[in-house]
Image 1 (cartoon, rainbow, N blue to C red):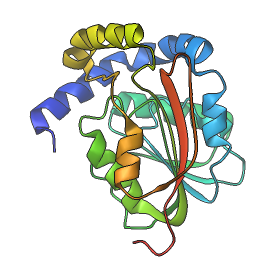
Image 2 (cartoon, rainbow, N blue to C red; image 1 turned 180 degrees about the vertical axis):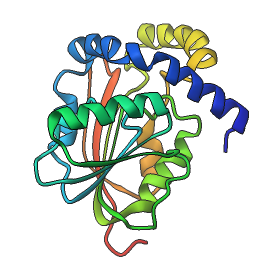
Image 3 (cartoon, rainbow, N blue to C red; image 1 turned 90 degrees about the vertical axis):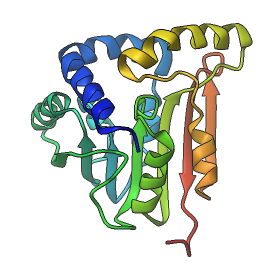
Length: 211
């Protein structure tokens, strides 16, 4: 687990940037991620947990029938998500919690969603393990994130950018969530990479018969 002092520093960082987060993400959603939020959320069903829900940018993309729970460790971002849910008329249990220690029993959810957040969770390996733990056997894990480019000049640029983003806000550009998902024994059902391989989205299923 990351040191509590570092975790609190990162929480303060995201609290500080909460008011400007949506403005920044509108640009990246338009230029990099396209319809990927809709791609992820449209596959969610039943009891759904969104990990690191942020300001709630995914809320409008979920099917009407899902029973949504969302966790976020930045109180100020969570406050924006709650306002957005109210404006959309979306019923959701939105609570402050840490992705690295989810406050739910094993096998609690039919679907777990995490978009554009594993890059900034201090221990992404532990976060994926926690998502797998709370997922029911046969349930789906749906992820979207930026990953190392398939083009080496772009990877080199990502590595340079990390020299700033990692110390500042804990944002990693070269992580590979796929490796953690595979290490947890989940079955990859769909995987797409685009924009020079910078963006990856995947759907994985927890095998039936696993706890």
